[in-house]
Amino acid sequence: MTDEELLASLADPADPAEDSARMERIRTEIDAGFHLLSGRLGKAVAVFGSARPGPEDPRYAAARTMGSRFAEAGFAVITGGGPGLMEAANRGAVEAGGTSVGLGIELRRQQALNPYVEVSMTFRYFFARKLMFVRYASAFVVLPGGFGTLDELFEALTLVQTGKIHEFPVVLIGTEHWAGLMAWIRERLRDRDSSPPMTSVCCGAPMTSMKPSG
Image (cartoon, rainbow, N blue to C red; front, side):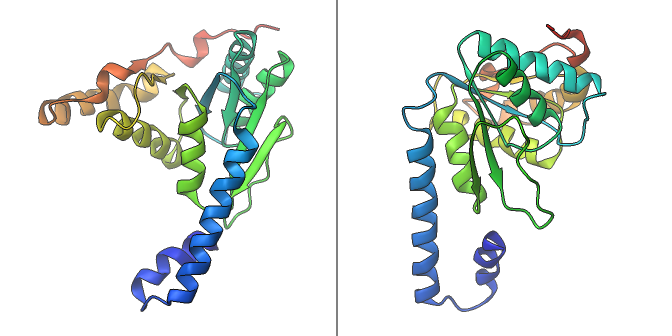
């Protein structure tokens, strides 16, 4: 896989020709992302969360409702394009007549884009994909999830903390899921930094408190 080849090269002497080819692939991928999304979405929110919950899960219903409400408010919904809570948010956006975007990633166990994605691209490089999330979204909404969800969360917090992005709210949905992490951040990290990003973070309601709209 492309990411694996790039990282594995750290253990071997770098081949200038191979690195030049990689640089061109990276440039092409970022350029394609810009061309796909630039001027097309208007206001947008990126929604992250677990790929595991199915339609029978209350969290799926809540994410679907959330996608619909964003669309009704005039926001495009951007997700990682996978199943579970990502699919639910895309589905809600489509059902409300909004714009549904899925930015997928090549994985060893291939994860197809969900059927509710209207605007799509599958990336080879994680960092190119994350750039698109931050560049074209006005906020991140983070639902319960695993390491991929945490990666997106801390990417945003780091960019806020270092002043690379401004006025970029990060909303965590699912108080039970996020309470321990929020407490740890406040206790262990906040006092160590003169400009913590916590003012940009809002921990929202329990997911089960969001009732389906239709």
